[in-house]
Image (tube, rainbow, N blue to C red; front, side, top):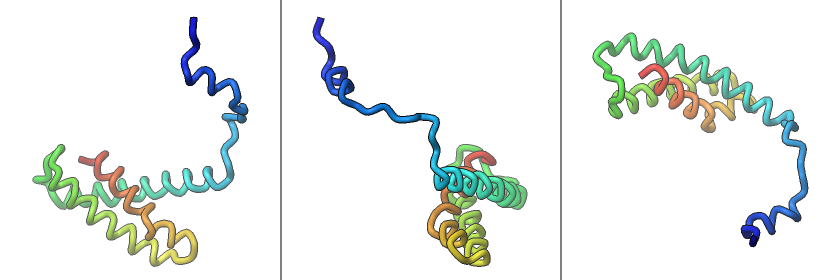
Length: 104
């Protein structure tokens, strides 16, 4: 029986500790989770102000995401520093996407 090409290549791979998570990864994960929590509050407020918004509507999802992302960017600017830069750079937009998808 002939081994697959991937099996031949995997023989030379070094094993790594799969349980290892860097401090930076933990900080990013914690920041992302906190931003999603904030985003959920903002998205729910948007939903409450738009009672005719339809689940599954791409237009409503886009409008919610834009509104929440704007608020997240404003919050990032208010926080300032490296954390504020991360929020304004894109972490706030990602959280807005997740939050609006959950709410809608």
